[in-house]
Length: 267
Image 1 (cartoon, rainbow, N blue to C red):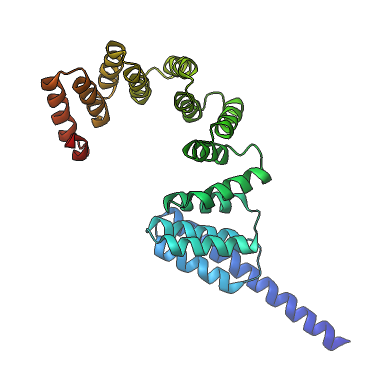
Image 2 (spheres, one colour):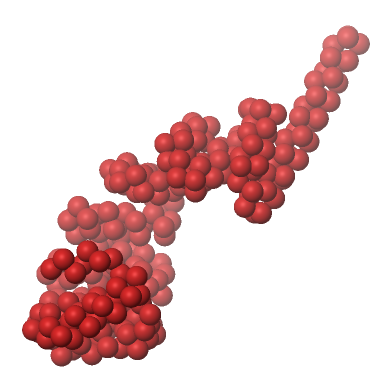
């Protein structure tokens, strides 16, 4: 009986020592991660995994390791890390979101969609998953499902600019021009200093051949962000449609000076 008690005490002592070492390693790894010492942080997290391979919290350590690898552009290794974490805890929402984002970066939209859907099965109001699934549905031209996700997100977060903009662009694609323009007008009123909104609305006006209105929006965007090359690209293309070649060329040159991609000049 005494031998059994002694053995039990030894096991408890070993467990406590391992748990303490594990916690110390995780804490050190987090400090290194916050200090952007990525190689050291990854090595420390791996030491923690070795110190206690059975801890359920190891799922999050694999997430941190995957984040580090993804930041280094090591996408396949990051994917392996996320998969290992999900093998430990397949319902960890943060891990599923990390893997979904990685799939997006790897242009694997089908698997990204599956992960976002799984997140929403676990947390129906998870806003990041709603936004990106709505975007993916839109890319698939599944406008009905895309609209449902965008509208749900806007209901949850009425001031979510990206969600409202996504819904407006969706309506423009889905041949609902009046709704799209009304939503853009509302967005501009809510965020009057956001140049990107004037660019989008100006593009809608241009598509309707309302060139004067488009020009007003592009001019306003340039006033707000005079060093944004996209503003000059948009106005240059509008001037081209309006057959104002000299003004179009001037804006194209300004856009190039500000770092625009020269490929848009190929036209």
